Length: 65
Image (cartoon, rainbow, N blue to C red):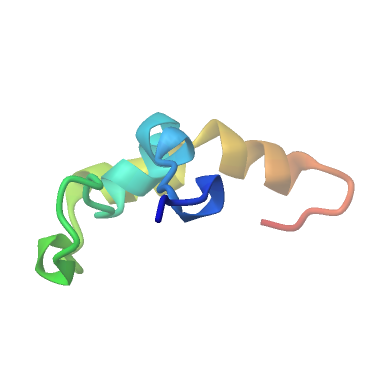
């Protein structure tokens, strides 16, 4: 019995997402939840302050982040 395409993991978005990598999302090499971190670091703070995505959302007419 084979595996359907829906059951295959797709990490395309994760690999391309700087936000997820900065905020502790581990690679898909391991299924262990212990690789995730909940510690705050300087890169996270700088990303929230300087993120183009956040600035664009706040500057929009709807002003929602």
